Image (cartoon, rainbow, N blue to C red; front, side, top):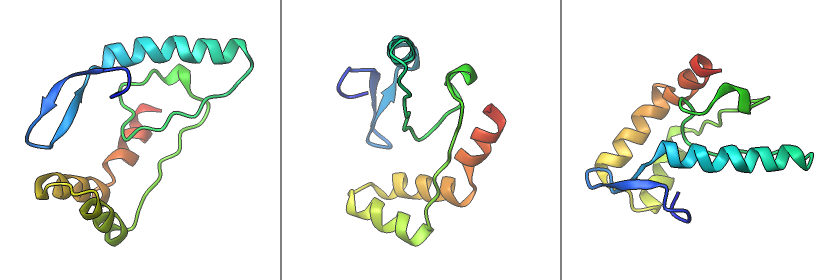
Length: 104
């Protein structure tokens, strides 16, 4: 997202970039098509999945973390308290896991 500038701006509350999903998907569509032509597989690593087309994936894995380990990571990355709390809540409530189940 940073490298190709696939963002629309910055969310000051969470100190993060606002993803431009359309630009990212356009780029990835070509990247995945090129890989398929060459007979290569692709691993997509992202913290959400509800906007990716189902046809792109043969397998979807959701990695989880123990909350104490996750909290320490977020502190080490110097995330704000607001951003830490949001991430912790999402992990506890298994938001991404549920999102993946609903999407795929």
